[in-house]
Length: 84
Figure (cartoon, rainbow, N blue to C red):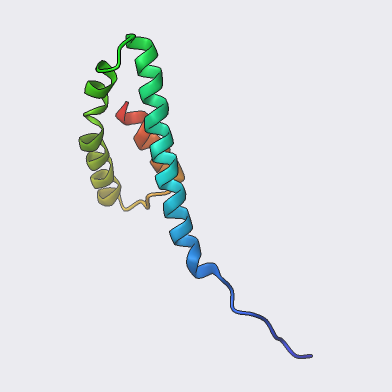
């Protein structure tokens, strides 16, 4: 019996996952903006609330680094929920 096969394309999987996370992040930020816009009945107040998002994301990434966890989908969604 002889084993044969083609090279797998698993090398592109991490890039696909990163692009999926970027789409998830942009969609989550847009959804949060819309919900806050409805809540505050304003266009500018959600922007002031979301301005804290970069510092919250930085703190979450530093915490993940300190405790030695990877940035997986669960941690990513938790960062989004915690930041808002």
